[in-house]
Length: 259
Image (cartoon, rainbow, N blue to C red; front, side, top):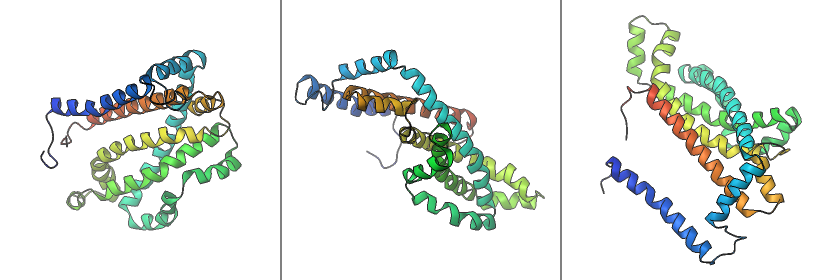
């Protein structure tokens, strides 16, 4: 086993399937072998039945759409603010010094602590949920953009300036194109953060969305529904991650692949 060396595609795929298959085998052995109580760990059959019940009886598809729409809006708003601000902070040190003392402490504050304030400012309906998701992704996206801009080799910047480019021409013709692949890759992490936070965002006044499904499982005391919800959320997260990665590979074909 070599250090940091890529594997052949077939070998990598084979190894990737070992852990999930092993987990499923252990799960089946514990549940079908009656080694654990169904109230503690439902069987795969019960979880599949729970998924079907949620889709057919509780309109899970509508909940997925509502939560996805909230995530999409929050992500677009956070990107619209964090990307231009991060570019300016990474390009101009005075702007960075001005905003850094304000935004840096936010990264160390638990986002859940802002829920009472957001309820006070936005109420308990749609605006509060989107504001919470916006804040949750903004505080992590901004420093990524700043770092990506600063990681652009100084030689490229100086060459552009020597050729007569203005400061803002350097930003949109050198800094931003060079940093964009790393910024776009960070969207995969932001996507994971949003799908993690959406349940917490929808815990306030849970009438619609995946948060409502989680609350429904709790009130009905159905462990299988809880596991079904987790599997659905995880599956959606993996699908959206695959889509973002595919778009990244399509947009930045010129980039040397690391794997």
